[in-house]
Length: 114
Image 1: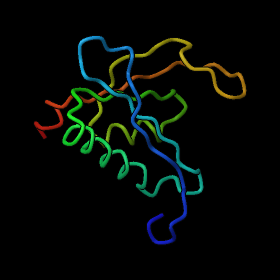
Image 2: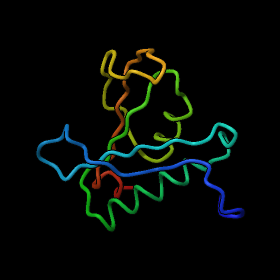
Image 3: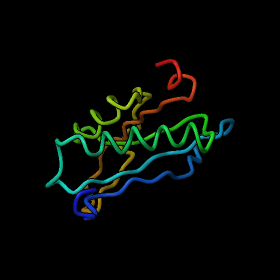
């Protein structure tokens, strides 16, 4: 948190090796649940999207989430990402439970249309 300097989560840009033609990246993020529902991750995602398109010249950003993670879906939608598709049984959680992977993306051209 800015006020205390305390780390409450992370956000990062990673390669997106699923896209062949584009200069595409993927974002990953995690927020300590004590800080959910305060808009912190939405603010962070919007900042990293702007950085990726303006400074890194990325063409497309994607992100994955799971059906139970409604908060993450809302963060992505509030940040301009659109639903792209679902990969059945695409994610295995640390405890071994398997979930579908929901894919969201935002292109640079769509970002600048807003």
